[in-house]
Image (tube, rainbow, N blue to C red; front, side, top):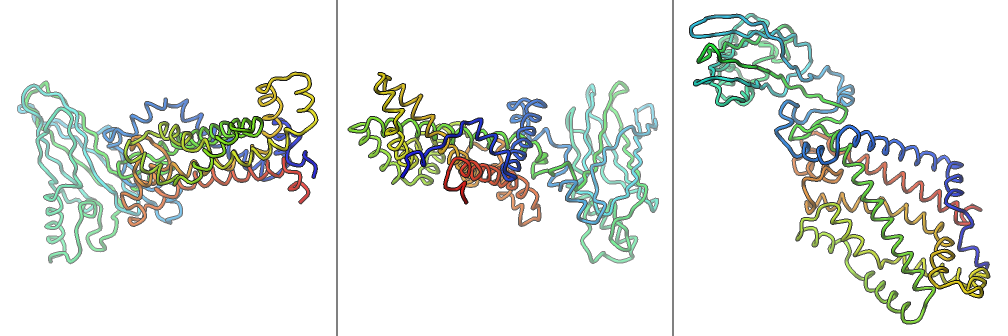
Length: 460
């Protein structure tokens, strides 16, 4: 058998040129280009550390809807689902000078086919002694004026969670009882009370009005009011249980997982390649030590070890990368690559290099490794998805740093909060789809390169 059958005459540049001849190769490179452009866009728009801090700051997302589906998914619902309504520029009317009372009026044209998810009022005031007192009225298309609540602001910055007030729900129950003439036999939620049709219990489209009368403790006191009616649709990826837009986690999680997979595969492959070449070239006791260590490593229960170490030390993803490399440097790849080294070391040009006095290190790094590198590349590429899946698996077990916005962490939080049970399928599908795309792309690229560098496959 010809020794050259186990090696490739292609250079790295030649391999890349050959990849472009295959449709699957072009497809995989296209996916890589899209993902890399996403990563570049993410890091140019916001530094990673700032994005990580923002991702873990629950207070930063209070004005976003909770568990809102993506806008593209809303298209398939066949309904005009509500989006966030930010009420700004109210009509101001002075009711009294002493005490100072101002009425703020907001007009709302509600044209959506479903009820909102929440209704909050954000307050930001400055006062000398006593905080402002607010009376909140709701005027529906029937012309009925309902006092929702009377509250005193608790601090300079405060939030009134209208949708969480049991007293408001009771007021709407009494309102429906008065209008219907009997106690309602269906549950009255606050959102249905605000935007519901009394007879059909469906959404009542029309013009609504929110009036907030503010009584100040001093004439110099001021207030900024920002009412928000939360929708059920937001952004290209939707939001999670903490109101965070998932596109932020996906944009930054994709390059993190990609870097993790590439870093692990590249580091492990290079180390194994060097060890295999040293083992095959030197032989003797060096070969025996490397081979025995490889066999011991092959017997170790890899995944349980990774879970145990991650659970005990709560590793970050980069610490996990180091542990992964340590546990994988004497992998089964050493035996395969050693077999190729034993074939290459008998070639005439290696004998010629020895005759001309080339050192062992020169022969190993300049003559043998470059010769066996092309056949190793397909395995390097195909192994990348395995390491990406490993991160996702460890995240699902909850043993990694919970502050890292990785794709696996997004999926884990989705399962922890019952995303599938509650019907928030997008929360699981979107990061999973990115992982699958990465895996398919690397697999296709690995198969193409294997076909290029393996003479037997080229004949098929």
